[in-house]
Length: 324
View (cartoon, rainbow, N blue to C red):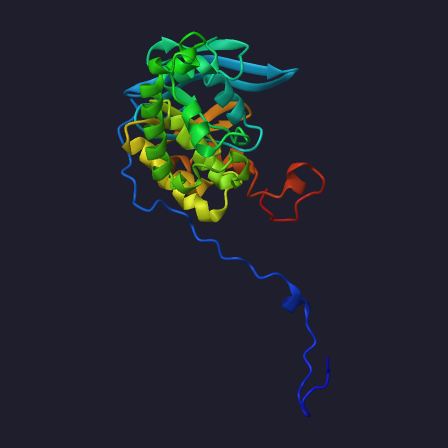
């Protein structure tokens, strides 16, 4: 290959600036259609543990420890019905642990909670699902050797063919099986996964698995949906779709509680925000007011975010006239 340069041409030597990666411009992801926010959800002042006008879930004195560490210590919390509630907080705040306790995937050291007035303390997750409360996971759970359609059909409740005796008589369950498959196909089309219905779930991307898990949860025809970090690890190309589907759950009459770190997403779609720090609820309210709450600022970036920590910790003395 020739390395000759045209006569008189200036040879450009790459600089550090040329070799540095260019900053990627990331657009703020918002729902395709602006969601209608629910208001008037609470009674009185919006403080931790405030009463809701129509709560779908009420929890009291929930505690969970691991060794000597208290992961959750919640005195009282209520989740408003037919609204999207975000559970936010820094890493280690206890969000997922509280999620696991309320959904029956873990047992608390103490406490009681109810869903639609029915006590759920000690009720396992598969029974809460039958009652109309389902959840998804931060790390998706798929059955790799089932097709997408088979995985969807597995999510339906009260299937006669799952009983040992009736399973040997197809005429007892064939009609119901057809109804379940028809509902699964409708949901797959809604979540834009219909063309993958015959593919194995193992072949799906992380974002597609998130969509499948949400669609499969809807096979139970739930009233209350809990989503654990639905956007975690999702390709930006699918983020918009997931966001629209979450808003769609509320529009279909369901209640949503989700854990999320993306504050912009929370601001766009949440009707109510609950903030946790060190296992406790430190703030509640509409997104706009919560984002300005000093307790939230302290929880995320520290109570001394605008001060010199070297001075605060006593490592050196402030200069004359310097504000501490």
